[in-house]
Image 1 (cartoon, protein in one colour):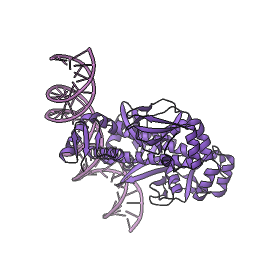
Image 2 (cartoon, protein in one colour; image 1 turned 180 degrees about the vertical axis):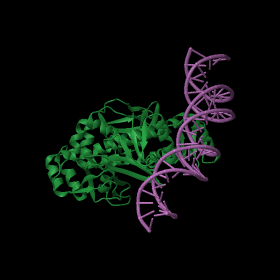
Image 3 (cartoon, protein in one colour; image 1 turned 120 degrees about the horizontal axis):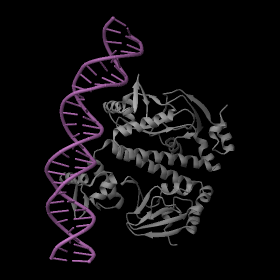
Image 4 (cartoon, rainbow over the protein chains, first blue to last red; image 1 turned 90 degrees about the horizontal axis):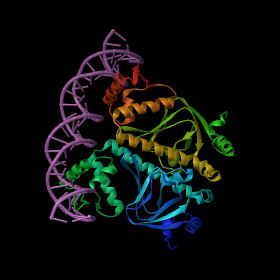
Length: 206
Length: 206
DNA sequence: TCATAGTGGTGACTGTAGTCACTGCACAGG
DNA sequence: CCTGTGCAGTGACTACAGTCACCACTATGA
């Protein structure tokens, strides 16, 4: 397995060797579904390259939980793996990605043997928790225009680009609102000169 | 220290002994502030009896994060303690409480020595994360009447009572809305026969 | 005793965003 | 070629909740 070990350099080198020995590397094309609700988790993912979107669904509405970037893992999978409970979330690639799949049966062993592996997941939990807090403060304090603009901004940052190709309906899903509202607000942002829209692509200007 | 060890029975007995040896027990009256924003965390709390409210503040608005019930701990303090960063939250007792204070310098040792202590915090993180998800779905899907009613319901459940003594303004804070709105909605819930109000006390009827 | 602060109740107004209904456009497949 | 499907744009309407400006009641203590 010819993986760039730098991505895992924050872990104990011995642990990295052990992980690489037992895990499998999977290359997943953009847009593929990795995990569905109710599915049991047999392998814990660590994203080496690319971007994975994690979301859940309430009554037809989709709610974006977080993005897994390179060298991050998925706390929801971690929980499901530890407790052997079915997944409550969906995961889908947003770009072509390389994902390392750690078999769950080794997880307790590694956690015991290499205590600093715990830290990785504590940090991830904390990160995800903070992100949710941000989402909530956004919901409570900001209006749609600011929420939508910020959402686009983080999307472009994650993609290292100043443009996103996404439909209004999809954006509406991710923000828990309706398509018409997104259309309207995007129009306003456009006349305000903050974004531009062309051929299904949204560009951030300022 | 004459503490009922049953409350900590989910932990390794040896660990419990070690914890009891090094920790101090604090009895805190109802309504006392335990932790402020920006304060450094020198002792990690485990609540033995009572109820502690954890909340944060954005721009004058208070946001309820979670309640710490008996035999639970505080993940925000845990994080602040591990990283030695100042607290981002406030904590306040909602009832007379007995709190065990674990000195943070022992934390890394215990976590290493007794790996199942990690599980306690993973479980707490997961619990808090799920609670935030519930909050968000509430914000996205429900109107004020349902949000307020459910909020009162969980409050009474936590207090093992069917009545709560709380001002409309305080409720407004906890839900991130305005006092007048709470007054209005409570009135509606009252005429619908779901609650009753007497002398500053709100009773859940159905 | 009166002043004051804290709380609760209400009517009137307003803005945001969710919904409905419809149009137009592009593109793929029969 | 037409047709169906998915996406975008828009005007009209509505309802919820946030805000403002009041008034009333109760406790507290100076």
